[in-house]
View 1 (tube, rainbow, N blue to C red):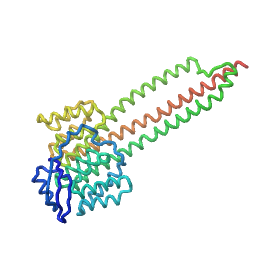
View 2: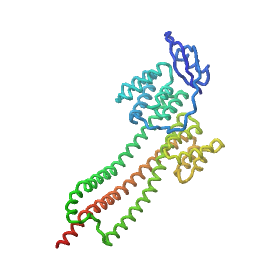
View 3: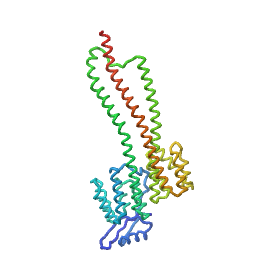
View 4: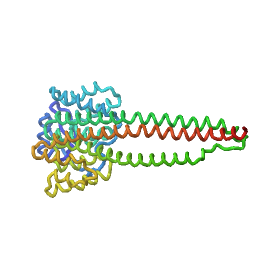
Length: 380
């Protein structure tokens, strides 16, 4: 398939131009005739091959607006609306003024004869590469509304996961912020109040220095080191699960949208934020060109990265002919495991954080009051 920039005349005699994806010049001419446009001139658009980037780039518009946009658009197309009318409807339903402007630009591009995928691709600051790829696959297969539904479900699951992660992270963040406020208040406001008195008494704010206290500090230090080591292992598992949950969900979406397995696995690997995991998947994916099955590809990925259930699920999917379904279910299961690990992390981290905060506050209190106690003993 090739992108063509063309110029033509509509049935009303108006001059129109745009960009359309077609397999050949004749295919382009046929597509335009179906839209009642007579082709006058055409030329191929030669693009540089895109560099590998994050296929789900950080978007400036909140994810919930994309979910509503693709849901409403697929609903209107299923109802028999023309694409331009469906876009106008979604624009009227969008609460974000900024996103309304983006949809308005899409409408202008589509009215000029461009395909929706090209219009979305042109707004690359608002739409990710993955969105462009899914919409383009739907256009090429002739089932755009179904591809939009797949994309909407994918974004909905991603939005739900983001919300659960934010909820899980809220309590530790509040605890850390509260602890920092207390320690900062003691260190910068309470302790300086005693400095003139301690200076006049020719004494310093010093820490308690008996063997029992140092022994307690050593034990506390060992506990903190142990917890840190456990957290490191747990965080590593969370990173792996998060990357593979996103990868498997995206792979399922791309295959459902009509992409070949070879193309889909390379594109899906770009959602991985961890470079080591991405390189490992792309290394293993090279086996597809050597005639290996997808099951063998997943089994060749290092066991340090890939979840154990994934290769088995792919094997069942290939045997039953329902690969994309098994991948989607595997993605859901991986997301559940991810949330369980995060819940475990928060459960362990929260008490440990409170204990460590208590130790630091106790340190400040002891540093503050022990010199005063020593002075009272000296005067007595």
